[in-house]
Amino acid sequence: MLKTVLSVGALALASALVVNVYAQDEAPPTPAELASGATETRQAVFKLLGFNMAPISRMARGAMEFDAEMAERNALRIADLAPMIPEVFAVYDTREFDVETEALPVIWDNNADFAQKATELRAAAITFAEIASGGDRNTTIAAIRAFGSTCGNCHREYRVD
Image: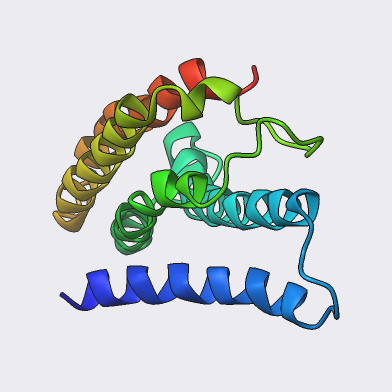
C-alpha cells in the first residue's frame, strides 16, 4: 500500500512540476509547451529507471562489487516506477510535435501492449528483488538476464534504436 501511495505521489509531483512551470506564465501553455513538458516528465521517469538499473548491470558485468541489498532495493524501485511508464505517456500524445525523444510513435497506437510490457517489467523486477534478497551472488547475477530482457522487449518495439 505504501509503495502505491509513493508511486502515485511521485507521479502527482511530476505532473505538478510540469503544471507549475506553466502556471507561472501569464498565457496558458501552448500545445507545443505541453508536449515539451510531457516529454520531460517521461524522460525523468526513464532517468530514474536507468539510475536504478545501472548498478545492477555493472554488478552483472563484474564492473562493480556485488551488493545484494542494493540489487534488491534498486529492483524494488524499478518495480515502483514501472507502472508510471504507460501513465506518463497517456498524459499527452506528443507524436505531432517536434520534441526530442527516443519514444516511437507506435506507443500511442499500441497502448495495451505498451502497458502490458510495463506490467511485465514490474513483475520481473519484483521477482529479481526476491532473488537478490537471498544474498547469493551467483543466483542473483544469473537472474539479471531475465530481468533485463523485459527492458529490451519494450525497447525493441517502442524505442528508437
